[in-house]
Image (tube, rainbow over all chains, first blue to last red; front, top):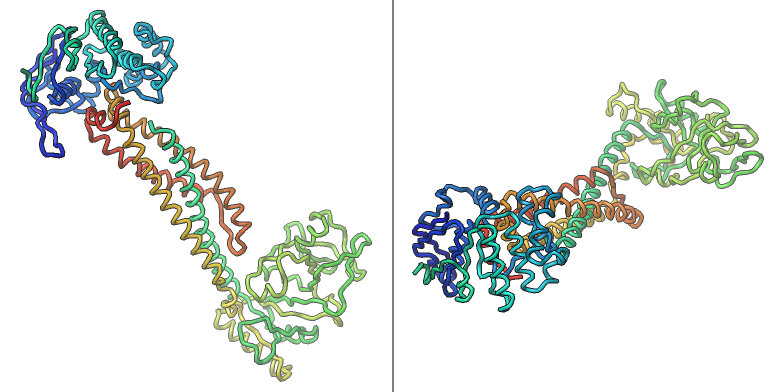
Amino acid sequence: MLSLNHIEKSYRGTGGKVEALKGVDLEVSKGEFLAIMGKSGCGKSTVLNILGCMDGYDSGTYLIEEKDTKTLDRKGKALLRRQKFGFVFQAFHLLPELTVFQNAALPLAYKKLPKSKWRAVVLPLLERLDLAHLENRRPCELSGGEQQRTAIARSLANDPEVLLADEPTGNLDSENSERVMELLAGLRLAGRKTLVLVTHDVKIASYADRVVEMRDGRIV
Amino acid sequence: MLKPIYRFFLIAGMAMGVITGVFFLCSFQRQLADQTAAEEAKRAMAQSAVLYRTPKETPENTLLALNSMSLSECERAMEAIPKGWQYAPIAQRFRDTPVIKAEGLVLSDVEVLYSTPSFFPLRGMEFPEEEEEPAAGFCAVSQSFLEAHGWEQGTVPTLEIDGVPKKITAVFTVAQAASQTEFSLLSSDTSLLLVLPYEEAPAASTEVFYILLQKPEELSQTEFRAELSSIEETLNQKYGEGEILFRAQTGSDFEAALSPKATDATTFLGIVFLAFLGELLAGINLMSLASAGILENRRHFGIKLAAGASYGDLFREFLAELLALCAKGTLLGMAASAILVYYANRAVDDFLFLFNGYTVAASACVMVLVCLISSYLPFRQILKEEPAALLQKEPNT
């Protein structure tokens, strides 16, 4: 479904050019739960960003269902993000001025779904994630676990085929981490979604069907 | 999209900009209006002349040292005026103030002037259409005269001047002094009764200030001046009394008296400078606020892009929010500037801000434009970045 072929990516850092990815080859099958493991700075988040069309790459090819993403302009990439991908971040990345409900419904606004239909989509998600009673709260009034569950609700609102999670439990305690992972795994199975997860935690990676390890910008 | 503190300061900045813009434009408008009025006054004055008596050594271009004429001197002067010219003597009783009565009550503190009906066209005034040209038994009063006695036009009883009934034919406003000369004669709030026609003024107690003359259309300025010199010469040859001479001068000879006072120009420049400084500061304030607000919200843009927004969606949201803030700031600025201009006009004696729709609209447009440009520039930087980069450059929630 997703295919990275010899992807290279470099940044211009303060100390000069930094090679983040040095020829990454990766295949992700439909419905697969893949974990990418590696130490901090090895390039795993960069791979996830490229998979989600959140970042560009210097060379190589990235195919989504056989379609080369090099041919896509920014609008095309935005459309892909809207239709195919859902993102969960380590830092939750919720909008502080919006309520739980509004945060979860954010993708629907960009999907141009009429506001009258938002509740029908979002409320079942919030109920499933045990957030329905918090729908009018703002992120600052939530615990870390609740915030991450809100972010998961947002990532599922547009019913994506692929969920991309970057260290989703990085800011959570072990109890909340476990709960979030069980939720993600359960949701993946129930919705027949593809899940790509980045982590440095072996325990979290153990939930995945397949684990790949990265080191110094390469998959080993 | 922007944080409340930025919204607040953006609205305040817009309002500030509109206020200073209004003052800036009001000052310019005032100056332009003053210039236009001065030019019109000069043109009008060039079309008229004044015939008066003055000591021999009096510098030209002044009426301050005029010697009033007796009625017989005035009649002589009028005889010297070529036939067909329009003129009007301006006369006042000094020695024996007339008794003015209305409904049997004596009215006090009323300045009484005598003139001929031609005084009105010469002064650019018109009688109401329904009135016939004033004849004997008619008079005109200033607006201040009516206000002083609590009357309105149409409700004024017939006046009696020294027992002779006079019907009020016209109400006029005494113009703001166009020159120091006029100012020395009457102020604009004078409760004035103008008795027409002049011929009926009691001869023994009346003196004439000067005779106002209108330039005949067929004459050029040079010919007009030549004719005036000729009148002057004729009168001085016939009736000259050594030290007191007749003098005839065109209105343009008094131009010096019309030039704006130095304080006016200084006030104007001071206001323009302050307003310009305010406008500049408001512009810089808006630019830095918009820039800081947008850059601080980089992560929000990244989150929205991750949620499926396109760059076009972000731009539309940004524009809508900005325009809403601009509208609020502009409305606030318009209201505040209306109040401030009102009080400024009351506080500054020698300067009047011209507040009108054009001034406000122009100022608001300038500020909206400044706000849009100053916000678009930092926003353009956002549009160049990948979503992942936008998410990384700020601390986490």
